[in-house]
Image (cartoon, rainbow, N blue to C red; front, top):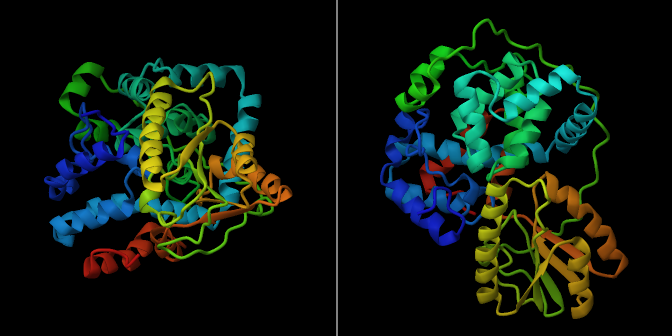
Amino acid sequence: MEPYPSTRSAALARLDAFLADAPQYAARRNHVVPGHPHVSRLSAALRHRLVSEQEVVEATLRRHAFQTVEKYLQEVLWRGYWRGWLERRPHVWDRAVEEAAHLEATLSPDARRSAQAALEGRSGEPLMDLFARELLDTGYLHNHARMWWASFWVHHLRLPWALGARHFARHLLDFDAASNTLSWRWVAGLQTPGKTYMVTAENLRRYCGPELLAQAGHIGLNGATIARPQIEPESPAPRTPGPRAPLPRTAAPIGTRSIVVLHDEDLCLELSPLAGARPHAVAHLAPLAASDTPAPRAAWLERARADAATRAAAHFGCSIHRCDSLDAVLNVCGTAEADSLAMMAPAVGPLRDTLQGLYAHAAARGVQVVAITRAWDSALAPYATRGFFPFWAEVGPRLEKTGSLGA
């Protein structure tokens, strides 16, 4: 079994195996050991929706009482919470992108050298360098290790959080704009006023496996203090999101002159609100990997895309056209004389930014774009207004009572 499942069948098998020990998750989850046996390692499959959060939550509650797996359910729901929080504040994502680009161009030579050494695992702090190299080699880090390394970057090296977040964005198999951006902001003291996260030698000794500690040899991290949070600039004017039209949750009224778009944020269309569509064709938006795309991430995505395309072809019974650009998607529309494009709505992040161009160009050709939100996301979004624990106070009891969100 591959370490980070890249097909739906492998993800479901991993979920089934993990659920046997799910009640132990709360006690084990913070311990970082080689192979990461204490966590499900389904984050990439969840991020790209080879399996959905809803499936994981419902499968967990079919096998275990709510009280015994509450911590695991919380971890699964953090993704939906972050996504809902950022959906209300897309300017936070815009600002992070702009800040990273500005810093890349203006970073001092000394800071640039320090950053490059840390990114390559040459900082001189053995454990932090082990984690840096693990990310480069595998595209994955345990959540606790991500927190430690981000804190080291911000508070020990005094490097800008936005550049660290961009590095994670390039390498993580499970990169999610909301989870990544907002977690880095939390470590840096921007997400929750008055709260930052400082990695300590004591925490590392407590939660790192003995193999890692032996490999590191020693733990430094001496003399660091909390870096002063940056003062955030005024929020830019809210951007205008792409058009959305509400459609039924089960069978979307997509006719034979329509095209369904398969993209990386939702790779299980056969279990989506688009499942009932009967399109002329499926346009699979799968951009070619850039020359600097890390190999682990590029390879994982290609396996996941191939799996999704095979399942989509079988489900919809029509041709699948791989499209490496938005122009290619529109060319599929032109060939089919399509009058509409339907897709699962992307969350705030790079794909939605990219798709802004599609809306305008499609409209110019007389093609309507419809983006559909999963009912699960719509059920979570109203509660993602403040912190996670007020969110959980609303969502948790519903899960305990019904085993789902009624979505």
